[in-house]
Image (spheres, rainbow, N blue to C red):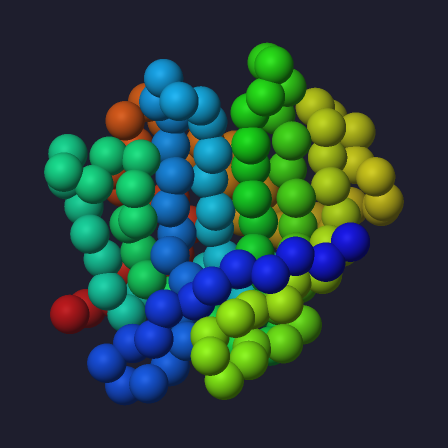
Length: 142
């Protein structure tokens, strides 16, 4: 399965995605970004505070080969998707390829432990009521 999402362009012309999400009456959702090896990427900009509850919290420059982890809570079940960034188009459209998914505790394919921390962060962020903080990205000095 593949999916397309839109990236934002930084002041320096790089394409970036937001670590975002949280739990609200509308539902539970989060998106976190991991490097190719599963480690935490650095932020280029951050927004925190109640004004940004369940919104966009950390802007992260992405590259081909990075991973996007999404967590969605539906009907009491937490679904986690691990996508790989396959291509970044000149207009900022990002092509993602699904590499693995989990419903509850069962992974569709064998799980790589290098993504454990990112998956835990995505799950925690999706279940964070009125979330306004960064859960996975490294807070760079601004």
